[in-house]
Structure formats: structure tokens, C-alpha cells
Length: 184
Image (tube, rainbow, N blue to C red; front, side, top):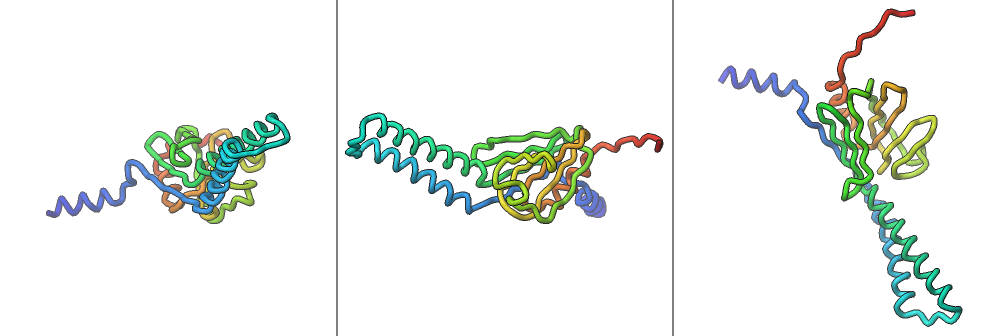
């Protein structure tokens, strides 16, 4: 019993082998409904339209409605939620129900991670996969806490995820100690 409880204490202080986290944005479903409505409008135009302005105008309207609807639908569904996984070798971010877009960062290229208590879509120019020259790249699915990963080349990658502080701890636990050279 004593050995068993002692090993339990040691196991609880060791980081889990794989850390996983998620974040959701239910507001994105409203935009997806708007995209579905555009697709439905395009289909309705194609099936029951009494268009008198010519076939070219009808085809352009149908194609335009369906294309815009599909872009909105798939563009929003890709960012309804995000899944983050920290393994012994990498950090992986998968978006949406099919996991695309996906970003995998080798932890060998990471020099640090920071907890960001307040990440907003406004800071990044909206929801989704974002790039800003002064901030780096990001996956933003909602406002709230996030993780900022700092690569060795100075680039940064931000992702909004629930329980971001534990993600930062998991990344720090897996980083290899670097040797610091003499100060110049």
C-alpha cells in the first residue's frame, strides 16, 4: 500500500503524456445558417425561376448564390471549434469538424509559451485563421484565454483554447533546456 500511494503521488506531479484542449464558438452556427440560406436560394432560383432577363443572368445568379453560400457555410463551419493537442514532440491545432485547417508545430522549434488571458477577434481582424505582420499567426474561434507559442526564429502563433494556462504548462514541461552562451 505504501508503495502504491507513493507512486500515485509521483504520477500526479508528472505532466500527462498528451495534453488536449478545445474551444467552441456557437455564434458561428448563425453564419453557417446564412450560408445554407444562400445555397437554398440558388437552388430555388435554378428550379422554379421564371427569369425573363435571359439565361445568362439566371446562370450567374444561381452560380453566385450557391458559390457564396458554400464559401460562407464551409468557411464558418471550419471555425466552429478548435482542438489543441500537445504531445512530447509537437503542438497540433485542428479546426472544425474535419480538422482542416491544421497546424503542427514541432516543440523543437519552440522557445517559449505564454498565457494570454484576453484574446479577441477584434485584435486579429475577425474569427478564423489569421495573420498580422506585427503579431504573427493565430487561430481565433472565440474571445477569451489563449496560448501564445514563441518559435526560435521569433515568430508567434496564438490559439484560443479553454484552460490555456495548463496548455502553457504542458508546453513548458516538454521544452528542451537550451544552453545560454556568455553575455557579450
